[in-house]
Length: 276
Image (cartoon, rainbow, N blue to C red; front, side, top):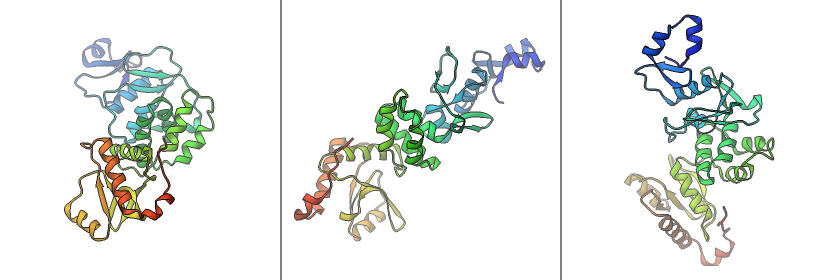
């Protein structure tokens, strides 16, 4: 059962005060669910929207989770764009400008579009964390970087917009996981390593990132032996980069493997990275 506004249920005669008290439990002031319910993130989001008097718009990490970003906890705070000055525990409210074309309706409740969700994440989260969210949102929804840049132009003086520009510049829909985004950023910022290409297709296999010119790839997961053998037979050298490896180890092994494949006479022509 969806959340209900208690005062509306009483006014309509759908419930008595006793029924509301004994059969329902409050998620937020005046917003209830039946006792025994295990609320999902969607339930909490709808309840927060009802608490706002149906004036709020589901936004930020909550919107990203509803679009399918997998690692956002269902028990985390619900984020809204709303005019409310006070809010209950477990709800984050931001009173911000938003245009009609930055809102869509999902299951009866308003939610920021993927573009606006991305811009808000880029403005409010720490840089690397925001890039992880933007990559995931782009991969799930088909969002492209230009869509977010277009929206960013509407809000040149918004709080956090400078940080947002950095995050948008770094987003890439080709990252297949949160860990792949972290590895991509490690390599992008490392000196002596050119910017890797993301999502390299070889036959029916995908290499997370690498340098096709020199046939050096980065694996962000353990690959089956038959796949490793195939890539080796066609001349690829793979560097394993999984969470148990330190940043220093990943960067050092990627750099040494790459440069071992580059002809000494051509090294000066290889573009360097080391950028944020």
